[in-house]
Each structure stands twice: as C-alpha cells, then as structure tokens.
Image 1 (cartoon, rainbow, N blue to C red):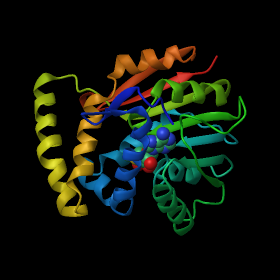
Image 2 (image 1 turned 45 degrees about the horizontal axis):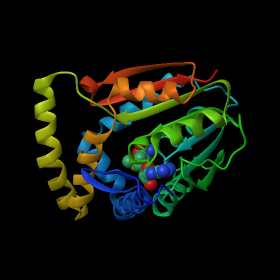
Image 3 (image 1 turned 90 degrees about the horizontal axis):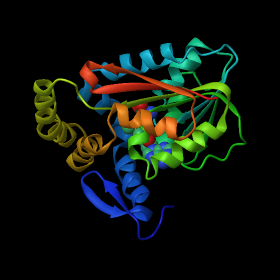
Image 4 (image 1 turned 90 degrees about the vertical axis):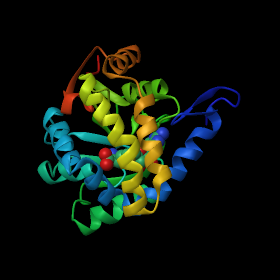
Length: 249
Ligand SMILES: C[S@@+](CC[C@H](N)C(=O)[O-])C[C@H]1O[C@@H](n2cnc3c(N)ncnc32)[C@H](O)[C@@H]1O
C-alpha cells in the first residue's frame, strides 16, 4: 500500500509511504492486549464520554447499516449495538490483533448479535458504492497513510444524505492549556505506557501522531474536498478532541 518513493510521517519520523501501515500495525499489535486499560488511564475515563457524544450526534436510525472503521476493541460498536439492536454494524480494523480483541469482547459482552467483523483498511473499502447509512471512525483516521483517500472511500460507500462521524484528537484552542497538554503528552503518557503496558514507544507515537494530525479546520477542508456536501465540527475539552460530522450529497 502507498507509493514506494513518496514520504509521509509516522509520528515525527519521515518514512516511506509504503512502510507506514507496517509501523502503525506494529504499534497496535503491541498495545492490543492493554488497549482498554491504557485508554481509561490516559484520558481519566473521558474517552467513554467522547464516544457517547459521537453516538448521540450520529442520529442513528433504528435500521441503519453502519460501518465502524478502525473499531479496535469495539467501544463505538458496543454503544450503538446496545442502544439500537436492530441496526446492522460492520466492525472493521486493519489490525488482526485489535479486531480479535473487539470480536472477543463483543461475544463476552453480548453485543455481537448485530455485528459482523471485517479486517480491512479504511483506505480501500471492499464495499459497493452507497452501502451504508452511517460511517464512524474513532481515533483511527490519524493513523491512515493516505487520509484523503480514506475519506473519499468513506464518501463513496455512503448512501445519499448519509453521515460520516470522525472522532479524533485535535488542536487545543487555549495556548496555556496547550502547553500543559504538551507536557502531559510527552512526559506522562510514555511513562504511563511504560508502567501499565511495558511499552513507552507506542505511547510516544500516540503523542507525536496527534501533533502531526490536521487541526479542526484543515480536517474539515479535507472532508469537503472528498466530496461531502456539508461538514461541521464540535470541539471537546478545549479542542483536545473534535468530532467532525459530514453529510453525503
Ligand atoms: C486508537 S485505536 C481506536 C480504536 C477504537 N475506535 C477506539 O476509539 O477505541 C486506532 C485503530 O485504528 C486502526 N487502524 C490504523 N490504521 C488503519 C487503517 N488504515 N484502516 C483501518 N484501521 C486502521 C488500528 O489498528 C487501531 O485498532
């Protein structure tokens, strides 16, 4: 995947496009077993609320066919499945270990009855045009090699007037808060990773990949460039996190 000579970023490192998904894969294979504990520890449990807000904003229809991209351990799919049991949800992830954690959890926590599981890249979706009423991506887009290509694929797979919701780390608005957040990200996060998951490097990547991700307005432009007719975003926690909602034409 990706052009052999073209460069992109893996955190702060410049790497060949063709190699990025391998490096990202190594990070998530390494964190898969401790992913949920680390998420709670790093965000003080706030990621649960952010995902609930995403589901609220998604205005899910009772019988929607939904693709959750970069599902990981399935937090978003679980919320939708429990609240809207008659929807059909495709949980998907590029990484086998993460998807396997998600599938096991879906079975253990009984939200598998309306879920299917697909290992796939969000940059090349193996679905026909207009297959879905709703696509969600939680903390996944940041890791894509070609985000624009991924967004165009999402647009192609959505039916008329369907919605895309992207939950992702973004850029804090207040400069003072931003300095505190940088200190937390580069000093505390890798230490937490080291203590709780014996893996500081993956959490260093997390902090760096967040800084390299487009800010709120830039991501909105990219979404509109991929052909969506309308896009708005909501900042949460001073813009540490943003939810973009886009509507298909
Ligand atoms: C930070 S986790 C997010 C998991 C879950 N959505 C959540 O919010 O807790 C990011 C996930 O994105 C997946 N991922 C990375 N690149 C991807 C791609 N190109 N296509 C699909 N999934 C990808 C990773 O394997 C990982 O499971």
